[in-house]
Length: 428
Image 1 (tube, rainbow, N blue to C red):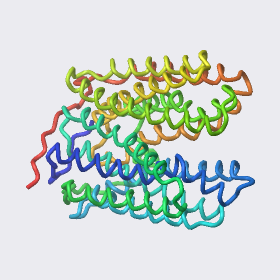
Image 2 (image 1 turned 30 degrees about the horizontal axis):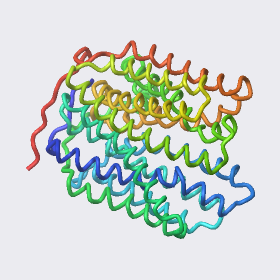
Image 3 (image 1 turned 90 degrees about the vertical axis):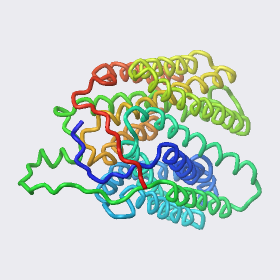
Image 4 (image 1 turned 90 degrees about the horizontal axis):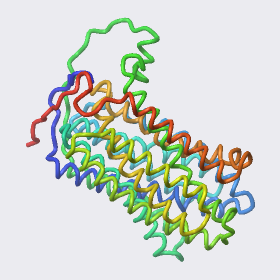
């Protein structure tokens, strides 16, 4: 890790910082994931009742692209927004503001192109906000506590999804626009409240004499050199491959109908139950994984163990096609992903190439997390056509095995070449 050249970095007390991030991050996920899980599909059925399957695929696919570029771009912009209000706090405000405005646009939309534009804007700017929240970890959290806060941040997603689902289930007869308005308000007000909790300020970045920069060096500004920082690339590859395996659960609804013969109503109820129970497992595992990793000062054994847990879940889905087995597999997958995500995030904070570009580099890691969510639905029909459901799940299991091999070159705690523990001053 490059030496930290930032001066004047304010540190929010750990408990206060954790509370602010958790509250704002979870509310932001209510605003983003409730539409992604439910409302967007219903909106397409309303606008395009005869072709909503195709139009929904178009909107979700193009929106996923903007989510992918939103994290690294938003991170890079955040890194360079150096004002008194705070470079992270600025985009914690503006990201959800523009994102929620786009959600309201979708709620009032009457054409597919309007939904498409609105969803792309929402994905882009919500990811600006995510990048800013994530970058607060290397900015303000001491090395020995990063696993703990990473685990708690992993809890924000399942909380956001669960809250959104409960809200929608409690208002089945409400107008569509009312639902979009509610999640928009939550998605914006939550981050705004967090700004009163999180402290930040303008930092000092020592001036560097401008020199001619080669194309290779310019590319290095976008993506850290794999030769100079191989650990970062291996971490990105391992997360990408593991998420390919985990994202098999995106096809559970289709599997319930096609493989188990459930009706649409039964499949909806089953997916909802698995989502809530699985998200609870993810949340608990995320917290425990990060805390245990900090306590034993080891990370790789947890990452290997989580990979094996996810493999077990995939094997159950492949070979035991019953509703009960799928429920169990959903919990197992949730446990594996929750613990892996928290420990993996803590590991990445140790091997970031440059503290000055922390948000941008975290954005690249988030691409590895989000891209499989688009790839798996795209390749699923091909895999199913080749060998059915067993082949589908076994193919994705191979990705998890490859992820375990990609973990091998990663350094354990205390082994990275320039790893140091930095204690930042308390804010006043």
